[in-house]
Image 1 (cartoon, rainbow, N blue to C red):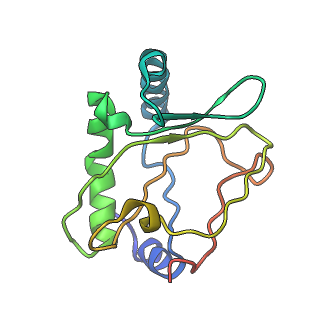
Image 2: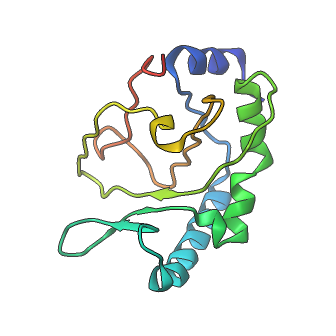
Image 3: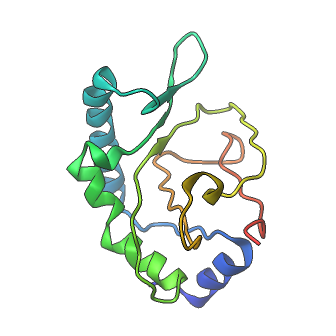
Length: 154
């Protein structure tokens, strides 16, 4: 599914950008399900299931473990196209889909985080893991896209 250049980029940089994997209508469907999910889940949320900004609007920043409350997001995290890509990146190894979450960032805001590796928080064993991120909105340098430091995975 991935060309050799994309696989090589992943292994060299620690990330790869794959455009067009989902159609515009599929991304719209994800957005619709996400909005419905949030409308249902926020009122009955457990502690630490959602993180809100410390601003006047208390805007949503993160939603964790979406797959536990939603068959749709459980299926999305196991989407065959995503699993096939991860398998290809990990030389055909079995893939364990561990969770679906949402991270939002208001346009033109900046967050700085110290360098980190997810396994410091996830405790995967073995530690071979990858996060798959689906951008539902256009992410540009001007709006403040997520930036990964190439090679930091090593």
